[in-house]
Amino acid sequence: MNAWLLAACVLLPSGLGPCLWRACRGEPARRLPAMALAGVMAVAVFLLTARGLHRTSYVDVALVTAVLAPTGTLVFARCLAGGARAEGAGGGD
Amino acid sequence: MSTSAVDFLVAVGLVLVGAAATCAALTRDPVRQSVLLSVLGVCLALLFLALQAPDVALSQLAVGSAVTPLLFLLTVRKVRRGPRAGPERDEGRGEGDER
Amino acid sequence: MTATHVLALALLWCGCAALLLSAAALALLPTPYGRLHALAPATSLGVPLLCLALAVDAGAGRQAAKLLVIGALTAVSGPVTTMVIGRSMAAEDRAAGSGEPQGPPA
Image 1 (cartoon, rainbow over the protein chains, first blue to last red):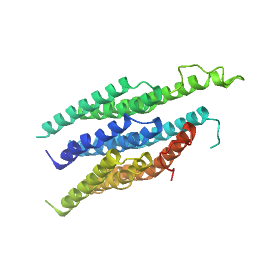
Image 2: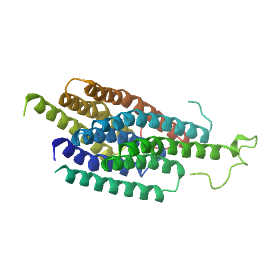
Image 3: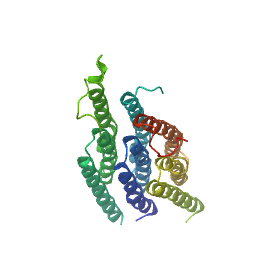
Image 4: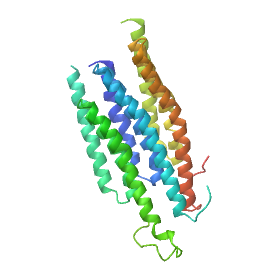
């Protein structure tokens, strides 16, 4: 086992476990930090697995994750804020 | 040597996917469920990459962690806001749609 | 065990430490607005350090450029995501009613 795979094995449970736990409780918008951190951890684990298994093509998965996960979180947050505004008393921004 | 590390990654991925799916199934509110569904998509993509299927992980990322939860969220917004868009704002609201 | 190898390993464990700090902060911080700041070490320190370690290990070339692009993308998108999530949380608090003593949207 080389150092890169060891780092991936450390990061996968101890990085994504708290994200999953925090994504299970609270108001919908308060779960969003856990979702964003899960995307960041996924990028790190993808990169470390790519280097550890000597497959350079796996880096593309990390690149797609780095683009898609923040975009998804942004659109999620906008949708949630719009929904909360529509459900409230109709207050301004 | 690296097979033990891959086995460990697969086992952890399976546990994470099981936990995320159980939490998503036990959550009642669809908005909170969609957040959990997105985390589940990321966990599934990690599991697929640990099983050495990067193309499946790519499509799972695109579909499972971005598109499907967003469709859920947009549907929930539309359903919740729909009855209130009319002129009678407060009579049109159902009983079961509040969180 | 050359110098670049040692440098790559040092950068790797520094990045891992930042990511683990971020995960611990997300698990342990008590308030929602405090947990929002748990994203900062991971996005602006952890993943860029990790990408730098992998780029040092890969040497000059297209692969290193791709890794550095991934690190820069994460470092740029982190603060933007934090800002938008904070605004969304504040909007949700306003919609739920201002009587909730959950801390100020700083």
